[in-house]
Length: 230
Image: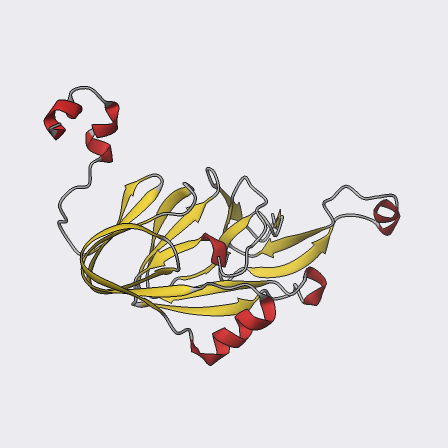
């Protein structure tokens, strides 16, 4: 059966679903559920995120340095990375989650939950940081700090909610729903229940991350628990 015969009988072959020939190196949205990366040298991605590729590409575990390795060993969080090297095209996705591409400039710094990182340019610097003010009361909350110039591909479990943060209006977010935030925001752990309420069984909403300052926070409409190595 020829492809032409199928084209006239199925919406599966709409133009928006077709893989187009690459026009320039780098990251773009294939559609709302996948990111395409035209590799001419190297890119970085979470391990297991590749769903297809064509060309001459090699996939290797990426070392994250002794410091980040120890942080991941202690916290069980962070981001397991792979390096994709060579020339070709690769498509990344994760559990049919929504995908977004963010451009970072040298003056930008973005903190992202490791489970929401899909891929990023090798020009970006990456580190695991403990969330200031959370301490071990929150189980020791650690997220990924990205700085430098380049693009980062994110996933979101559903459509995101981007909430402005101002000095007059701090934002409180469930730690299992947060995707990322402006790194210059101040963070602290906030308890929204009284001891009496907790002793009576509680509402299930005991602690939230409070963000203060000037910036934004990205939230997903899901309280997915982090999975080690994901």
